[in-house]
Length: 347
Image (cartoon, rainbow, N blue to C red; front, side, top):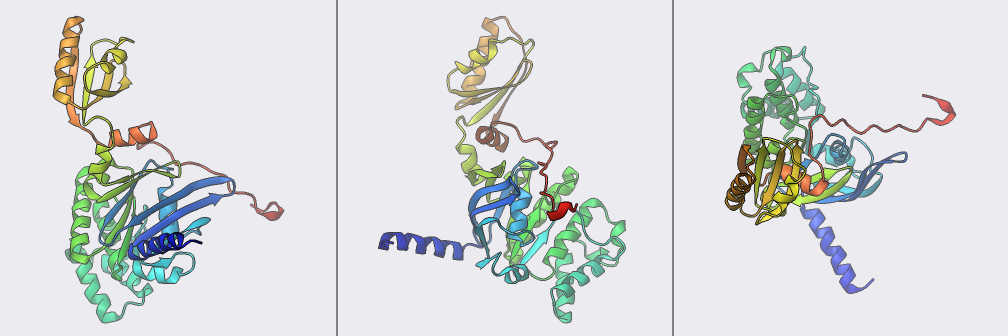
């Protein structure tokens, strides 16, 4: 090995050690099915890092490997400087994990749920009582500490789950689809709470989501994952700037015409035209106002009628379409794979 190669490897090792989370060419296979295909990224201390993608993209598989719940097939993941395969106990001691499902015991009180969890982490009694009060205050559940969990609303139960994941004072926090199933008001409340927790508790957070707005408003940087691969990585602003066209013009004509796409593509500044449905188009352009003026003039010259017209900035939806060739849909189902049969034909 040359001295330059050794220096490069040493530099990578230092970068991995300094990052709160370092994922290096990580792979997960189930039989012949490859759920995660050589993904690499790093999460810096104090950052909220988002894994954005549809259901079945590999986000939950990634988070389960990083939290030691399932073994890594290839590559490696370092959490807090510890290898998740070689030092799994050390990793578990420094992380908090919020799964997709609500797993707190409904028959216990809010405080009982937190107390049991803190005991599992061997938090001393005096520290346990102090931590419970602090995390309940942080998630605005202090006055419900004696309430049975079954009496809480969905948003309150999600806040309880977050409090439970913090009660042992972790350094790194993993949240898998933290706002799935919540109404818009509760979702925004969770975003605000997570941002406050990041600032007041000096937490590093990794969040998986399939909500574009959540990724945009909550995350410092975003990795877009699709079909088990990482297709884009950057801040929300960087990702939007990477898409040709700084504005999106949505236009609807009163009737469908096969010529519309070609006509729109010829307008000044237009970089891409996406057909949404009959007579409805999304036009990516570097000059939204100029394109809008040209659209109105084009329709008038052809004696056609515009039934809707709006101008927007490039969104993460546009970023996702640009990098994956399709839109992110909530209704997409998780990929299904068949586990290989056990020896001897046992189920």
